[in-house]
Length: 126
Ligand SMILES: [Zn+2]
Image (cartoon, rainbow, N blue to C red):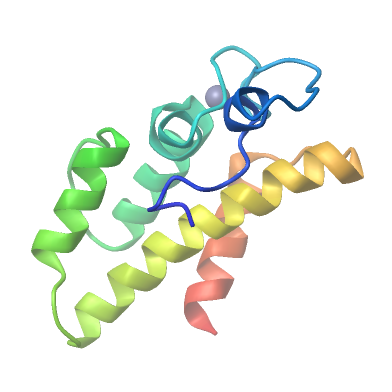
């Protein structure tokens, strides 16, 4: 759903004519909540993905959605252990950010990036 840009972000909900409090990102409260912003442009997400990359021994700057997706698709084709690990990292990053947004929206709970990183690590270990 994220790759297809079909997640119900605030901007998408507003474009569909639904009433939304505002279009601001649930993580930073500054920028408009689009897919591209949520997963790689937002400071929270950028810091999270950067921490995941460091844990994987990858030293590179976090880029935007399109470039991160292209990097993953290009570098991690196939079914090798490293390719599977990075696909899991990517999926966990997206899933745990979406889970954090829902937690803030529906549960009123805000966690730090390090707490979300623990979830990503746990997801990948499982
Ligand atoms: Zn944000």
